[in-house]
Amino acid sequence: MKVRLKLQSNTVLSVQQENRLKQMGATVRNAGSYVERMKLNEGREKMAKNVMGKMSVDQLSDLLTFYHTMAQICSQVLERKLHDVVNDFTS
View (cartoon, rainbow, N blue to C red):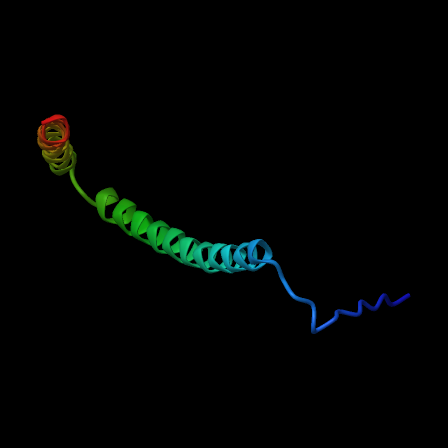
C-alpha cells in the first residue's frame, strides 16, 4: 500500500517555521562536519597508539612527563588569563 502526501506549494510559512527549518538545516550540516572530525580524530588516535606502541619505556616516560608539564603550564596560563578577564570586567 502506497501513501501519497500532497503538499501545497503556495503555503506561507510563519517566520518561526522558516527559522526552525533553517536551524534544522544548520544542524544537519553541523552533524556531518562533526562526524568527519570524529573520524579524523579516530585516525589520529590510532596512529598515535601505533607510534607509541613502538616506543621504549624510557621514551614513553619522557613523553608523559613532557605532557604533564605542558598541562601544568597551560593551567597556570589559563588561570592567569581568566583572572585578568575578571579584573578587566570588574574595573
